Image 1 (cartoon, rainbow, N blue to C red):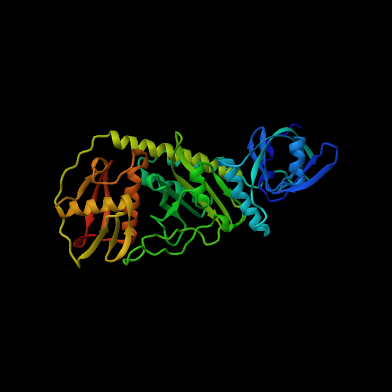
Image 2: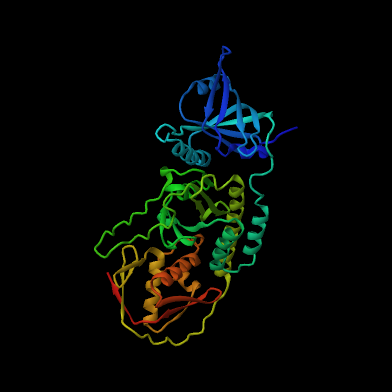
Amino acid sequence: MNYSLEMIRRCFEGAIPAQIATCAPDGTPNVAYLSQVHYVDSAHVALSFQFFSKTRENVLANPYAMVQVIDPASGAQYQLALQYVRTETEGPLFEYMKARLAGVASQTGMSKVFKLRGTDIYRVLEIHCAMPCALDSGEAQGSRLPALRACANQLATCSELSGLLDTLLDGLRTHFDIAHAMVLMLDKPNARLYTVASLGYAESGVGSEVALGEGVIGVAAQEQTPIRIAFMTGDYAYSRALRASLGEDGEREIPFPGLPSPHSQLAVPIACGGSLLGVLYVESEQNLRFTYEDEDALMTLAGQLAFAMQLFEQHAVCQEETITPSPVQQSNGAAVAVRRYAADNSVFVDGEYLIKGVAGAILWKLLADHAQGRSEFTIRELRLDASLPLPDLIDNLEARLILLQRRLAERCPFLRIEKTGRGRFKLGVNRPVMLVEN
């Protein structure tokens, strides 16, 4: 039987260590354990390079090796005849393997030893089944294609971004049995990502931020590559400590909503046409929860999500929007103080931090206009307003409004943003507002 790398991808999950055999120029053999074998494409694999061992010395002198991998579900053993091609010390593949190795090292108590120095790329010359499976060789988990198809069909029915995000998260829960997930959008000027939707957390964390290059999410965004970790590791954890403000008015950070100790993590970039829009992130308290099939399926969904986002954005830009002014309703109850700090557009409501950045600037403009008797607005006018610190169009202004809308719903129910049509919305204010500028 002829075997392909696609047929044995389950062997590369890292559940059972692989072995590598090399030979010195004088014919002396050497056998060692491998921390990681990674599927690159149908003709190549990558092996982890951690230190200059006898294996490394042999390969540089004689670029051939034999690697044995084991299927964790069936017990079948396969031998791969390999030829060394090159070593990579940076880039998406290196960061992917570095993240996965951190999980393996944490699981085995070898975090201080397992430090990736490079990824060695090998061409696969032949695959041989050394020991046929003694157990049922069927898939350990069913194909993800039915779940992918169901989610994709539901996403195709969406016509606006808010519904798209909610439909995606509901599809992950219903069809993929994923209990914890979030979608983060890119804030390109500040090199950060902000949470715009989440699933399964006590606090939604909408508005919480992750820097590019920080943790699984930040690395996936920075390298525009999926990052999948099968075991718990502190190397890619997020700090949940509340960080104090620079001033005396309280905190200006929203706590990240992730699990305290995720054992499995998967972050995939949301990108279209080479441009990063955000990251889709899922996690679990179970080891080895997400497989390569989950990774492939979520990458596909992320691509569909990115395409839809750009389509909605372009449609909003091109569409002519008109609004019919309506009288502002009188507000009742105790007055609330809304304070803005112009340096970073952070907004506090009765002394409690609410939002900052572009979303904070938008809220301040809406409240100021509302005080002048306006309640109806369009996305188009926001985009053309020179007073707002808006980045380029790819930043997706509608995502900022969704963030603001959901943050208000959680923290300030007396302030609300209601969609009144495509590209149109209304600001509702149920209590008198005093605007204070700092």
